[in-house]
Length: 128
Image 1 (cartoon, rainbow, N blue to C red):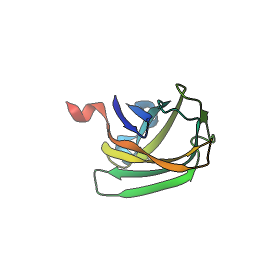
Image 2 (image 1 turned 180 degrees about the vertical axis):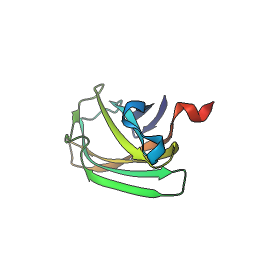
Image 3 (image 1 turned 60 degrees about the vertical axis):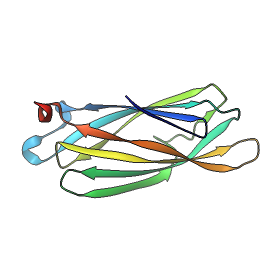
Image 4 (image 1 turned 180 degrees about the horizontal axis):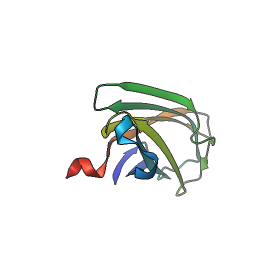
């Protein structure tokens, strides 16, 4: 598990290769990632936006930006957490992702950036 804390917000990531949805002969590899966001700050916060950078091993880079995560803009009280699962497709058996969340402190409307640490996406057979 990869984790990073930014301004009192801890982001942890676990990944999993989805063999049943992948087709290596067609250069199609599917990965899921589970993200847990924990609010260790003294403020209630809300996740407003996400910005992802996704890299294939063949140097293809994609950016994904948008509101919330999987259709939600979760609000987290101090000590609370939010977990979600999402996924991505790669053209190679390995790649990586990283990004940022834009969060808002509810008390004063101040926006701040939380770092999503870089994590690897690797098909298990690539490690053999």
